Image: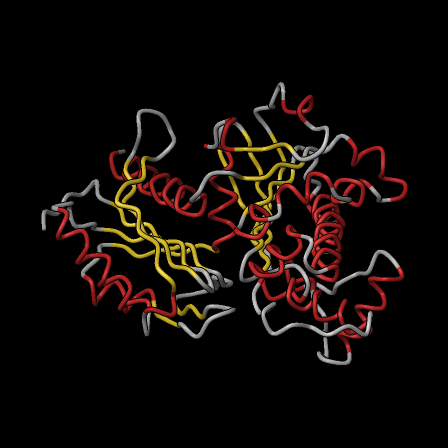
Length: 343
């Protein structure tokens, strides 16, 4: 396999899927992604096994061997050792560097990587939620935004754009306490308290969270929870077909709670220039989010209601925002290092 200093391997490692690509500088600031591959993490015993599989794929295609690796990981990144929050994989960045001969291995939180894709997204890769198109007509050069990723887990990251530079503020805000916004949600919280010593937002706003909501709705309604409803996909499909009233109720509650949570994130970060939703669950529920009470709950912030009505909410339609953001982040860091070395 050819080796070239321009080849950069980027990966988006979540609790369910691992995505890989080669990233290269484009004509503008947006990176170009190629050789994209997606796996289920359950296919491999470890991240090194998945990387090996991808490098073998590259070899068969004749692509250049990458010299650097940039990872977006579903975990807090506090040092060399990484442990995924919602999967058993754990690995050392230093060990990956040694084992694969990379010049550099870096990691960033996966939601931070998704947030860093935002400055590079084009209009057709976004969908406004609610009546927010007017606010997007004249984007400002300096912006305060935040990204929320909903999939296997719940990720939150702030994104500050100043003078063309992007800075992220990583967090583990998906693990804050769930705050009910109605009596029905308070009933669900009480039921989940009987099952878990602590109920975080992620207990409801994630793939497993939708299942928790459905189970709670069934229990409160004293109805039977069919064994077939064993995945978010099954619950959403049944809600759409109208075959199960509890599935529909769970999906409607999910969208409402997500709206309330997104509004809280906007208040926490002062993200007055937009909240961006990404991940597999918002994409699957986008029609429900649009016609449900997401936006109403987003704006329902008491004395800040009028302020919230001016905050845009958008869904990310790009199929791989984590890879795009990880590539942008790694290429930016590499360019800065090269510029310093050239001085």
